[in-house]
Amino acid sequence: DTGVSQDPRHKITKRGQNVTFRCDPISEHNRLYWYRQTLGQGPEFLTYFQNEAQLEKSRLLSDRFSAERPKGSFSTLEIQRTEQGDSAMYLCASSFGTGFDYGYTFGSGTRLTVV
Amino acid sequence: GESVGLHLPTLSVQEGDNSIINCAYSNSASDYFIWYKQESGKGPQFIIDIRSNMDKRQGQRVTVLLNKTVKHLSLQIAATQPGDSAVYFCAERTEGSQGNLIFGKGTKLSVKP
Image (cartoon, rainbow over all chains, first blue to last red; front, top):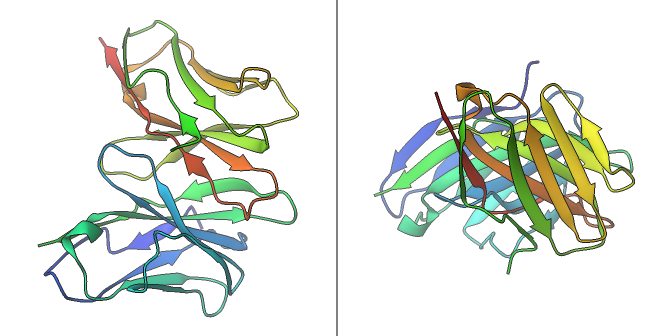
């Protein structure tokens, strides 16, 4: 396990379609995060999991967005009825948290383009 | 507004010179800071981190300085190389938060050969 893996790397979809992204964290990391990054900006927090529990969701995460981490390992992020404003890089990160988190490691991201 | 920001959006240095990238943060409750490097089309790459109970931490060619009095963070890169050209972000985590990081907008470092 050499890092955080994300799939696919790129996704082009038509407006109104649903898309799903996958993230495989570093195996010993119990926390998993989703961030969104638009051009020229820093990543913005969307949501995070500790093991299989989703513990926090940002206000950026509208009702069209849903994330899961069913077995506490990989996670999926689904966007329903995509809009052009959803075009961004979706980044996944993982960390090891037992009171003090450290080792936040990011994947290479999934770049979504909604046309 | 953002609680983490950067003084300079772009920085151009000569190869071999030292680079200093600055970051201001506004939340005095932040207890952990990370510098990331991001190349075009890639995810942020961890460079170095520092906890709020430290003032300085050194890595290979990089040093992070934390001044809690003025809420300032800096990244020093020694003997800057062309491969250091990228956008650099500082990120903070607030003590007692759920663990998510808050990022600034980033500084683009360009290294001239």
